[in-house]
Length: 264
Image 1 (cartoon, rainbow, N blue to C red):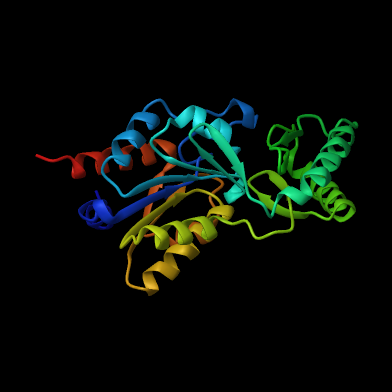
Image 2 (tube, rainbow, N blue to C red):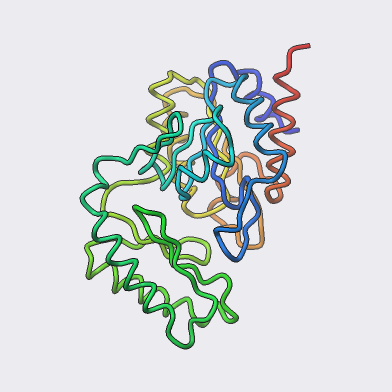
């Protein structure tokens, strides 16, 4: 295992593990509702939660389903920090609440629009406080991508939302600051961490790296782990301290952290 991972393990008691879910702890699947963590993941996260100061999932998924899949021992932040699951209760950020009606209206329009001819395989993911317009399962994703992008832009303009592109998806979000950087940096400072790691696979994970940059500037030991796939953005790989191959590579890394932090 690489030296940064070994150094991180040495600081586990005052360190934090922050990570994405889709493409990181689960394989990417055509239909987002079909994704599940790899079988080893819940137990590995539980073990690490007893060794590190915090183990936190920061994902674009809903907090409710993440809490159901990953158990009670890890922090769960859904919708890029708009939701937090605590003791079985999902808390929604106050800044997001005024936009729920707009999200719901945009959802209804998106569902009607995406059913038109030529958009077979495209789906609307209702996240409650956000929407995902997915085109991964389209027979011709390159052809439909511009059309789905235009639809997302039109809906955002009509309903006062913003568009954030991801891997074969356009997300519609409230126009408030919701990034993984906010969660990672805030929690690291609240807990007084002197080491932090962020693991991700997509463009929307780069703000997690930005948080580590800020923490590193203040003296923390930080490790950026990129999950490599055929769709990995080059910026993620270039900025990484450690690169692993797919979610299976993440499982191996988490397993190594368990081994390194197990008392002899």
